[in-house]
Amino acid sequence: MSEAKEAFRLDGKHALVTGGASGIGEATCRELVRAGASVTIADINLAKAQQLASALPHAQAVQMDVTRRASIEAVAAQLARLDILVNNAGIAHVGNIAHVEENDFDRLMEVNVKSVYLVTRAMLPLLLERRGSIVNIGSVAGLVGVKQRFAYCTTKGAVVAMTRQLAVDYPKELRVNCICPGTVYTPFVEGYLEKYHAHEKETMIAELNARQPIGRMGKPEEVASMVRYLCSDEAEFMTGSLLTIDGGWTAA
Image (tube, rainbow, N blue to C red; front, side, top):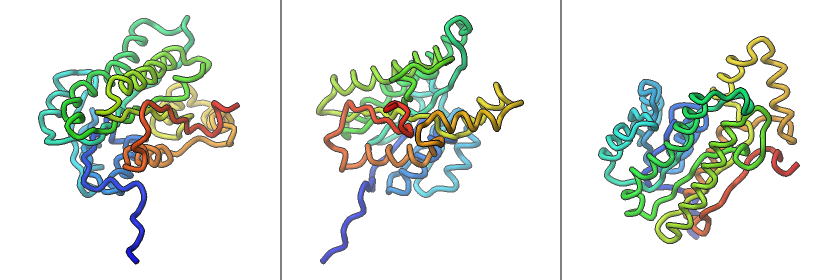
């Protein structure tokens, strides 16, 4: 009897991960490589992307500014094929509508929303050739209101809408899904704590843990495992889906 095939394999597939040098992006690159894929780590921080690529087999690093069309198209021109696109790059902001300045709002829209449009559009011909899989990293903030996150909630709601719309336009040509994490402990969150709560960091970590009913923040590797599943043959019937991984936050 032959041995059972390992589930969720991605052998022979080629992936591009934006914001791939740290946090959820880094964990995703590691998991996709572990599943057998070749990965292009796209990040504005080329040195950090190169450091990660040097530690992984079948990985290459490219510098990409996801807000600049020329930067994105330069990367697209380097790729011979693409089976998987993970739109992961993003930034956050704290404040209600009265405290969100116009330049901050514009910046969040540019990085979190327009980048998904620019990167997906540039990679679309390659993805269509392979009946590719797109995974957008959204947030529970795109599904429910979160206090003091007006601009962030707005942008992640847009990512949810783009995911569903793309799935409707390309039902047979692409698979497009969105992962909506709760709070995941990453350098992204660490930077937020340092910027806004350096004097009460431990207290805030406890509050962030408690915000998820399960009692802790998520791990980047947990989100990465969901990305792997969505890109695998086992998920062939899944498109236009929003998957929460939030410790019970949106169930409460």
